[in-house]
Image (tube, rainbow, N blue to C red; front, side, top):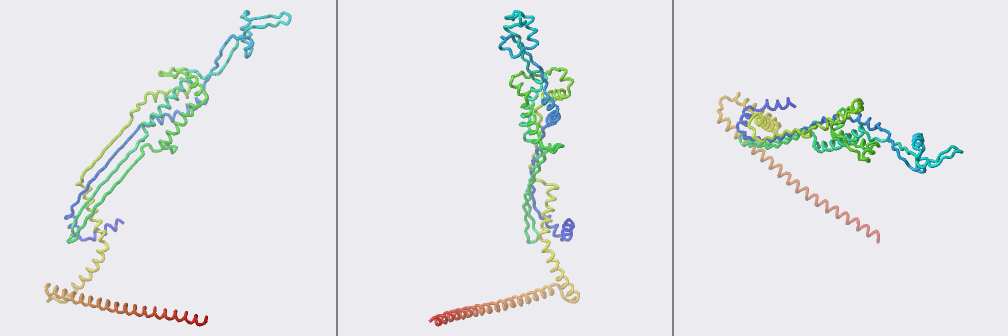
Length: 383
């Protein structure tokens, strides 16, 4: 295609191209809008990195035994344990009766011990507080960054021009719009986009809050822990809790005002290289439009040149004026013969057309007569 375009330009008359460009009056208006919005998503990477460690903690929560001691009437005691007997031995005032023969005693009251498992320890409350803070943090970051990091570029230009070659007026008007968009976040190594990653961590953290240990702590209305976090042996030495502490400190110190926005707009009339290129493009469009006509004109020009050349070489005594007069007379003579021949052909065509219509009419009349005759004979046969 490039070779064909180059051929069109190279084979075109240089004078024509020069006249085209010299008389060309053009205007190029350009407008562009550039907008770049960037958010820091290091918090998302940090949460995704810590999710596995939090999952280990909530799946295997730490617990301890809560023991409640209460002196109750013997009939209300759920279970007599070794501790109940030891307590009764040291509190004889709770013995109501003693049977010497049987060697049995009847207490009025005994020590009742209730043992229950509890998740209400500092490390669990730390994780419980972290999950609640994490849910609020994710919701806030999701709202702030909902438009996403992106780059948008819109360009528009209008080119109008007019020129003249001889008696031919040439005009052009062109509007061009382009729109470019790029997602600056893209997909992660797993092929997940930003919205999919956000939905994923929201779902996982939400599931953490629905585990048995977290629901019991919520039902007990335990006090949430606050910074500074107490560095217990578990938090300092357990890898899962170490990562949880890192995440706590990260989201607590995170700067939520992290939006970076760049806007640049231009609206101007170009007088430089861009306009010059559009002028040349206008010329190329014109040459392409007339390419087929030029082929026909080249053929005509070839035969005319050949005739003139042959005549001049064999008739040196003819002046330019005599040659022009001869050409004019011959042109008029041949043109009149051509017109007369066309008139004769038209006359013959009209006569034949009239004759055809008359014959057609007669044929229709004969056909109608034959049809009527046929039906008359049928009527006679019937009688």
